[in-house]
Length: 86
Image (cartoon, rainbow, N blue to C red; front, side):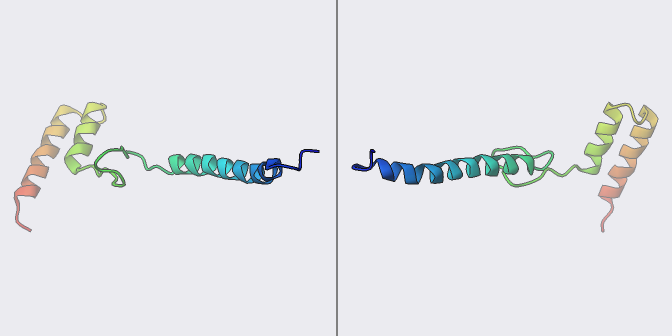
């Protein structure tokens, strides 16, 4: 029927085009799903953010897990621990 031009070439390449397109979509979905928690784009791309003990203590105090006295005591102990030479 239409075999006298380049129409047959498009018919041969179209399945390959769809395979590549579907592969890209799957790759992008897997890549986004594997992004670690706390990961943000930008200059630190590829690095995970690590919480310091002070950050953890601040977060626990902010969420109400620990009271003011416990927070103050823990902050004081962390400051003492950091000032001691190793």
